[in-house]
Image (cartoon, rainbow over all chains, first blue to last red; front, side, top):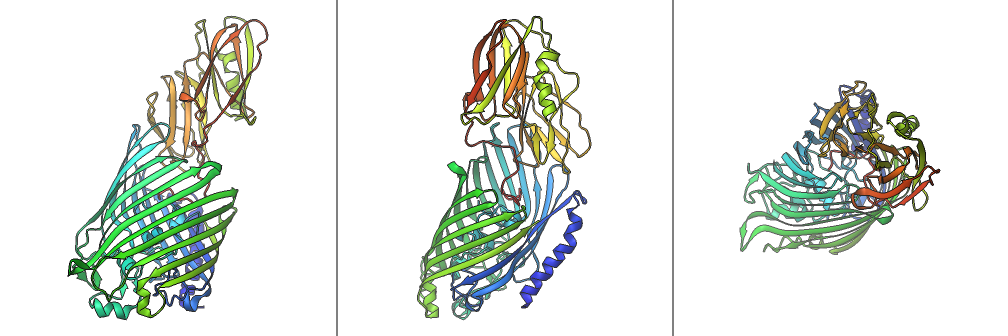
Length: 415
Length: 219
């Protein structure tokens, strides 16, 4: 048993010890939720030590693997009638630290007796992008593996700041909400998309996390000041970023949400090996409940990231990125759900440093069947197959076009 | 629950001053598959002005398992409703309906003050803590009203007269969610009224999310 698995099991044992007293409802007004997630994984991916250009996080020596994928504990408490506090600590198989905080948020939601509603979030939390990750500790009720967009959101995007929402509600439940946020500590967002490309997994970075970059010797030969471990939540230039968007919703029927994000990072600033990556994107998502209780979720993202000073007419790294996903899901009978998702995603290189190829054209299919027993026990059977064309693979003298398949059996206990 | 329904069904007969011989008008409300529609509201307004009297004790709309129970409650203008909390958690009930806007904080085992509904109209209720919760108080100035039981059945004791009969359900797929018809009651035994209706395919159930383990902080 390696150290990581030991840490995971230790954290689960710890959860078993500390959570039962919290189950007593109204224990100082705190409610405990969480999950433990065990996986058997089999893949043909060649990913070595999670630093490859693979579309999955596992592979290479870990082609055939049983592990504790994740264990998380969320404590939520009401701090008066308008305030809620929530903090999530987790162990993650691929985490830099054995246990770390993934979210810590104060939620302000005063009651309204008019059609207008105001609410706000303060702390570290996910920007409202994913329409799939709505369950405990940002898991999805549909699939184990997140879409390409939501995998990246989990890795490199987190709001460290405040978000305010103003909504207008009709009596039939329809509402429109306008939201905006200011944030810091997200200056390195885009690093992984440019250096590694999109990836599909279900790992959400924690506050003090770090990711090793692929092909490190090559990166450092060009960008000598770039650390070989990117810190996803670093502030390097002291300049706040923002996002703003709106949400249209008819509850239990249709939801459309779009936002524009700009971290306003200065791409020429580098601090402790972490460059500012000026990343901007538009995100849009649509969730519709179709006839026969079929759920459709579509998400799209189009953006650009830039790092470094001008080389010719462009920043040293200047990459456009784009992704779309379409998921169909149906609860066939109570407790049994099937889901299928198609992802298509890629990057386009605008910059002029030919030694640093970072173009990608990929797509993937994910099929999942999950069976939930007694509310708390969920068995998942899932396959994800990806066909990807990543030019950076030529640096490792392997074929840029790869086909990879990931089989997973997951047992998740929610509490 | 059944007790409440029986109480409701007998309301017309027991609490309104009825000047002439009362006839019992029965009816059913189902969808086109024959499934009963629960808690639909039936009101009857006759040509003879009838002064209605309200109940003296407040009506009840409970919070159970993070739902409004009843989901729909019909009351007379001027009547009061109490909102007890049978859950182990807090609820924060509100309405922004023009008919009666209010908010009330509900602790477990603490009986809140009743809310008086003094304007006719539909009061949509929500919970500021549990966004999915939705309930309806149908405040009517009609002298006679009833709600369907779990079998979709309703009953009204009415004097002979010409009536405007209204059926309302929040998910009824008609403009304003109502069906209106004129009926004439003579001294003969009335023919039961059968309503077959279509409900909207997408509508708020007011029940907790079916995907368990949802975190309400992820919007």
